[in-house]
Image (cartoon, rainbow, N blue to C red; front, top):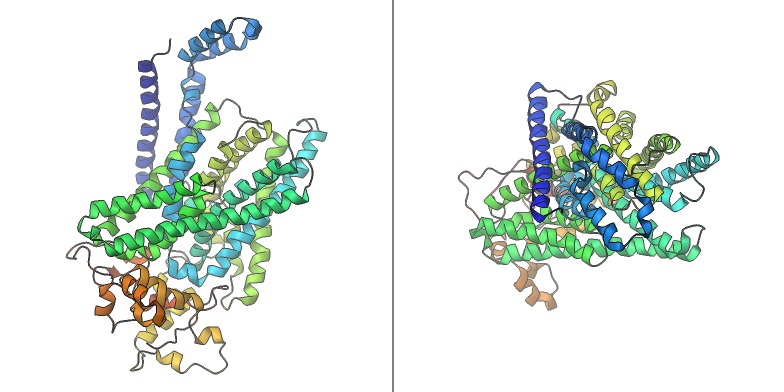
Length: 616
């Protein structure tokens, strides 16, 4: 019998193996960074170690191979007594292959490893540059992901039909919905190795934020798309096109996205208000714990409601960085940033190790040559149909065009990673889904090793600018205008260059955007200690609510109403000599110039930010 003690020893051995893999990965990362080797990224090293361990487990356990043959030969026992069949099963479990047992439930990836990865991506976004390029980022993340899904789905459906004609696939194993499902999950980009090299080399800031913003947001879109396609299949559209199922799935897509977004924002508002009106800043450990648990609650609540927690935790992370972060004590700011950075690092490397291991230890791989070839072709075709046409349309309205070399780099940087694998591994019940998992693994290996390793040569070949100071980046021209504005302001605080703006400028370039007004006059004063008192911005009949939500610090700093906050990605977390729990603006040193968030205004669609022009 396989006792509880045996099971405990088995589980401890499996965890020890993963622990050793992560230790080797960390040492390899140190060596790569010390020697400045960029041909392989840390995630590629993690997968390599997983592959080696999987290979060892697969071909060294001779006893398991022998027992497996014995069990497969017991089909004649189908009509024996149930008790005999149960005894045989239990006896086989004792000799079960270690690699076969080293399999985590798919929900572990979704509920434990993915939330910190997605949250860290949102929490560390440079929001100033994100809003500068928000229209372009949203276009690539939403419309681009839908185009990618459709192109990959249609291409793969053609290859499936070819596979059926050649006898490699049985007719009926794959449906159009399976191909679209594959298109949705493989559209989730994860250019982690590319972005790491971009950070190290300090590439053009606009290229970085376009790729980073797209990868963070399109994960959420891809996940909701997979939900919508699954809903379509379950609503009667599995074999033939159904109008009712189609519109139902579209409604489901919109409802899930909006519902998940609302839950994420709700938890960020709750966290902001709690950290604003309590004295948790006196206890940084409790403050950090509450911040972490409420952020994770956004994910779990959305999942419990039948929505998608990835969307919830994504927008929760963006809002937490925008508002709650500024209510935290200096020590809690440091802890939250380091905590999520560590969880993201550990989670990503664990998943990539597991992917390497799964290539040899997953017992039901289904590799089909034609399907795999079509997948390689379709991801490049879909990426091209995504980047080039959308960039052409965006450049019509952008004042600062996206140049051809940046477009080629974006095309090249469409790596796949943790999200695609986590979506593929959730369901392996059918031949189609097992084929999708096996193909996804091969695509992840190829894009991380080949495309990720070729990033540095490609940057040089495309003549992409490196060593760029974000504050002096010509692409961030508005930042220079703000610096100039700080030295050229009128007595009333109005920037001199804004006051002398030409008459021919558009309304968007002469006045703050609606979002900026809402954020500056209502959201930030309500959720943080900064901004004008709500009693001076809300209507008279809302004065009681204004007094309730306005921080005492807002009255103390009434004369200083210009925005001076930066998002958490641009804050130097140096705790030396700073007072814990001090109000925003007193306890942190920012790396960006004052008035930086004024850049959130302007034409949010197309990447150019107008000059601020307002008076207090």
